[in-house]
Length: 243
Image (tube, rainbow, N blue to C red; front, side):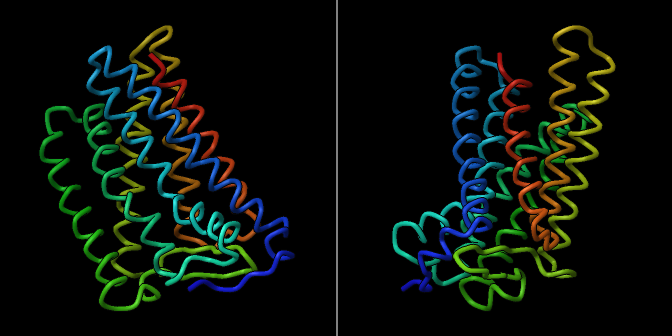
């Protein structure tokens, strides 16, 4: 069963941009991740492999928006139950956070990376349990607010909910470990390596900003600025990781 949507709603500019930008993030993110993963695997570059996986999982955070858009096109309405929109997107937070913060720990605190990964793995498990328990046993509306506008759905985490707090912790950690860590590595490096770490630093900083805007707030029209920022992130990450 799906929510009924009209053709005029589907053709609205907001709905189209919402769906197209989300789909671009998922598609380009996965393509770039696969290319880098393949090349890194051949080179046996361990950290590069992790970075490719991180990029792929991060792009899947918009799978809910992408799936809803495709559902409207194919079936004429949104995904139902609506909580499925949140599950499809936010279930990728845990793998993206664990792998991403492993990279951040490698950049900033390599001697403590094991304990850092253990801590964030624990937080990620808690996040996933809360997300799926709300969806399966309780009410996803308790943790995620959904706003339906025509054939478009926007979502953000409920302020003060444990999931909201965990997302804030993840984003701040990525900014400090990955963003600042990449800047630190860029300062210490020269030539092409410095350029690549510079791209990586910009990528992580933009990612934190757009992820916060897209998942913690109700951005409205600014949503498209966030989405374009994420597409830029995918491109920058590709150039940063390109062997």
